[in-house]
Length: 359
Image 1 (tube, one colour):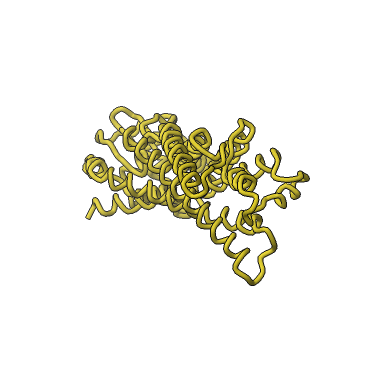
Image 2: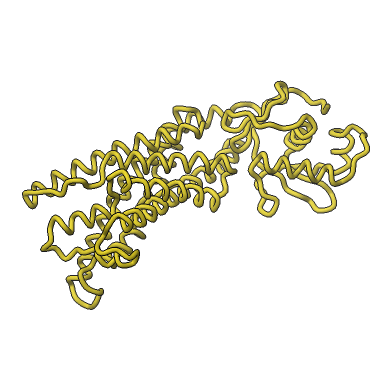
């Protein structure tokens, strides 16, 4: 067993406790064999310094005859446990033919942990703002799709069709920004309350989506009653917000469980959001596409029509299949954009803060 002074090392979202011989990620234990734990301890203890193959053989395997393949497999397992990538390392760097180097910023004194606690509110605001921007991006993309599809005639030079596009674009961006803010700040607040335990993202996202969905529906009904004397019943609301918010929270948690990779995280979150978006109309709810179609039928004199979307899936009008397909697209796009923005913000915090603390 590797002999070293007892210490607690913190890097990325991991805590390496050499006295208790435990590695934790966001407070959750990470299983490592005794030999692999010793190899990681040696790397972390010599952070920034090349650790040669001979040192691994002498200090970790203690002279037990093993091949280079054993060390290679050890490093592969450590990278897998740490969510690292040999092609683009952020924790363990390979020095070909010589050895390995631990490159992630680390903290041994606990000062960084205290500094992160002091800055937790700023981190919460940053994560929430990042997710809000991601939601706005999803609204922009969705608004373009619905804007072109919802115009009563193909877009040509002239005010009418362009006005429809701009109105729908602004409306979808506004709703997506509010939804992104509610879900993202819910996730960020849950993360802070749970001390960076990402499992609480699901509850935080669900709560934020529920609140924003209820508020958006209430404001929408009041606005239409005030302007037109009537409002469409059944617009997207609290139930839809709860389901989509839960899917975004689940996607966030799964993204970090799978290793904090942007593309992988966006794909997993998008899949969770698409599933929730497909379930919403099956439960009698409506997302943005369904709500816009409802508006066009409530106010038939408007220039807003979505029948052409139904023809793409073989329906006459915007029927249940159209709503399920559009719901899946909306949910996947929204969840992917929000979670992608959160991952980028979290990655930047992890890479910048430790360096600042060491100055």
